[in-house]
Each structure stands twice: as C-alpha cells, then as structure tokens.
Image (cartoon, rainbow, N blue to C red; front, side, top):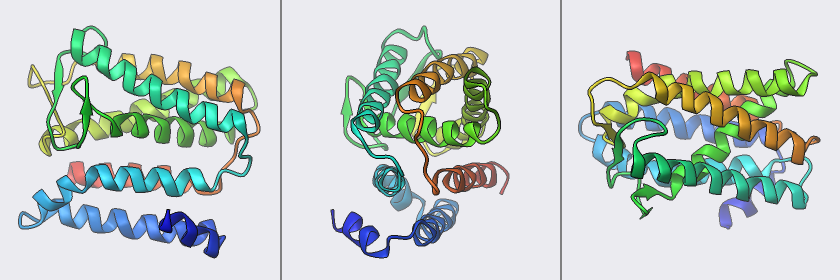
Length: 216
C-alpha cells in the first residue's frame, strides 16, 4: 500500500515508467550474474506483483467493469494454467517449479497476475492500431504469442517451469493465441473505454527484457 501512496503523491506515469525501467534493468543484470541469479529468481513473484500494482494503478477509467476485468482475467489465466498442468491437453505437458512462489493446485498464484498484465497491455496497444474490435483482438493475441515465444526459453532456463519434452510444443503457442484472443475480446467488450498511459511502455520493457535474456 505504501507503494500506491507513493504513486499517488507522484501522480505521474512518467515517474512510474522510470521506476519500472530501473526494476527490469536491475532484474536483467541480477539474472545474468551467477552470484545473484538465485536471489533475483526468488524475487520474480514480488516483481510481477509490484509491476501489476503500478500498472493497474494508472488506468484512466477505474470503475466496476475494470475491477471485473481484472478479477476475471486473473481467474481465467490461473484456471487455464491449472487445467493445462493437470491434463497436459491445453499447452502440452509441463510443470511449475517452486521458484514462482505460493501455489494452488500446482500453479503459482502469480501466474494469474501475469495473464492479467499481458492481456491488459497487449489490448491497449492493439486498440491504437485498429478501430475494428476483432482485428484489435487479433493483433493483441499475436502480440501475446510473440511475447510468450521469448518468455518460454527464459522461463525454462531459470526453472520457472519445465516441459516434459526438451522442445516447446507448437500447441503451446496455438493455445496462447486462442485464449489470448478470447480474453482480449472480453476485455474490449466489458471495458471499452479503458486506457493507461503506462501500458504500452511496460509492454516494450517486457519485450526488451525477454529478448535480451534470450540473446545476451
């Protein structure tokens, strides 16, 4: 709560952007250094929670529909991961490690927050690229799938989760695309006036973060 009070006192998404940028630069350095990698792995759930708190604070149209979207996107993202882990039918055969913190039904709770962040940011960017809601959802789903493409190798290397086979199955990306499309469309329908000056910049931070972790 003290973080949100600080953000209120700043009243400026630009300051929040610089804070997030500093956090992810520190995270990149910490995860790349062998002496600090374990510490920064353990801090990942806290970082995702902090990212979500900062991001969602700057929504320009906070109302009950915004709250419903956040709750439903968390439940949906978490729920589809539970089904995926328990059955292997959704994304393929994979299991989460203990690195991402508190779990329920073998899935870290923070994964629901991650889904909400990515749906929200991708949706806001997509709305700037088209006026057609279905094309917007298509663009957002493609953005989320691209992000997952870069997230997967990093997550495996850092032992956030592991696949039964060494290669990541194609159906993982197909499932990400389909479920992202559904959830982004829901987001647009329930809260069409949603906007956030921080969302696109955070998306660029996240993409840069995972691309760099893949190649450096």
